[in-house]
Image (cartoon, rainbow, N blue to C red):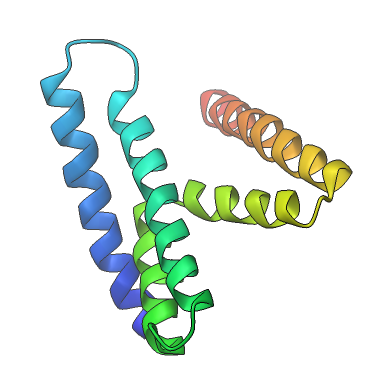
Amino acid sequence: MIAGTGGFIGTILRFLVSRYFQENTFSLFPWGTLSVNISGSLLIGIFYGLSERGNFLSPDVRIFLTVGLCGGYTTFSTLANDSFMLLQEKEWLKLSLYTTLSFFLGLVAVYLGRIIIKSI
């Protein structure tokens, strides 16, 4: 329930922030999405940093902010945090595989989804 509430708020924020940037930049470059992804990564870093410092965030508040708010705002923030954890642990191969597979398989999945719909 708490993650769902955060996700609801994050989704609304994603729409508003992305829309603001797209309407105020006259370019085909996806500034809105980039802004959401980078700001979401900053937020999840702040929230996990706070939770690692001690009693700043209760487990429920951490779930609300990270899984819910950041998850609804952008799943890229979770990808970035997972990548940072692998980097911090010096898991170079896992980091390379995770980031490469996430990007390329995501791109392939988008392509396949579009092909499936076009073929119907």
